[in-house]
Length: 113
Image (cartoon, rainbow, N blue to C red; front, side, top):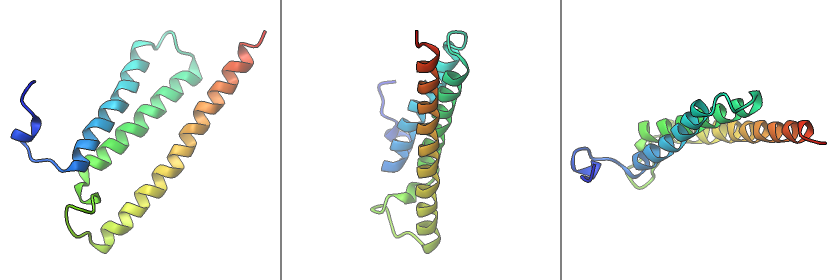
């Protein structure tokens, strides 16, 4: 555990980011599983959606180290994919925020005395 991963596998900067972001998303998933009975429907949906979002971002960063402009020259197809990923994750990010906002408003309405 004390030996850095770089001694065995050479990784790019975005691959390190991918590992970190994936583990962050995995934490949301594990939190949801551990507290499944305490969470209600929309809270479960929010945690699972957040876990899926961050895990997928981590996998994209891990699988595409060329996204870092300093590692090498990107092809036109890779530039297109980079812009496509940005657009897709921007839309998914707005949907994720909307899910959390809807869950918060529903929770506030249900707990109003």
